[in-house]
Image (cartoon, rainbow, N blue to C red; front, side, top):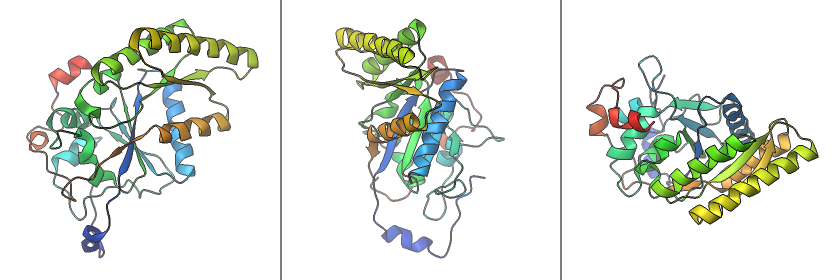
Amino acid sequence: MLDLHSHQGTSLHCHTPEIELRLTAVVSQGADGRTLETLWQVCSHLQRLGYPVIVLDGTAEESYEAPGLQHLLANAPRGDGSFAMGGAHASSLAVLPAFQGLYTLAFNSPHAAQPLQALQPLFRQYALIVVYASVATFSTPLLKGIATTPLLLMQPGKPGIVTSYKQLKQLAIHTGLAGTVACIADSDAPARRREIDTELDTLRQCAARHLGQHIGTTSIYAGSAQDMQRLALRLLENAGTIGVPAHGVPVHLAAASARSPTESYPPFHQRH
């Protein structure tokens, strides 16, 4: 499933110019199905706009039955090292389990200044990498060196405001990054939109007063294609870039290959 296929033109890839790869972070809201469904819609809109997307799902753990990022990092690649699930321009969204792989990159990446730089040779066929993970995952050195604006998908109401503020605070403390908050409206009625705008205004004021950050906010209605496309473009606009490594092929991560792909990582699980 994760084999890297070579072909007659493989030798020419080393002569093609490398381009920077965009990457953005989306903070998981736990078992909230509406948030996850919104993310899939946003990524699908980007693909229809001509931006092939791969999602590294940091909430899903790799296994032999469901191989993912950890397996790609732990095994020396063949051919040009690039990877695509069904081709980077496939209509279906590419999603890889990435819980252990993200941990490996956060603490054992060969690129100390930008841990996620190791992803560039692997996924350069895509236009955008979406890292979907818990705020605890992003509180590691994972996003170091990448000027991205993490996206938080907030639920309406006071609990949503409190949860989003806590996540913004964790991001501010551990990464120094200010997030963008999109509240998922449960109705497109003007009165409901005004209520949500008031809630977002409250969140902006709290972030400015207590965190010293001016965060971006917006409200979206999941049933509106226009809203989904607007959020998709905003996600793309807020993405950072991964620089091209000095070597054109992925570096074999000794720390990753020394562990079994199903081995647990206690320090990371405690953060999760």
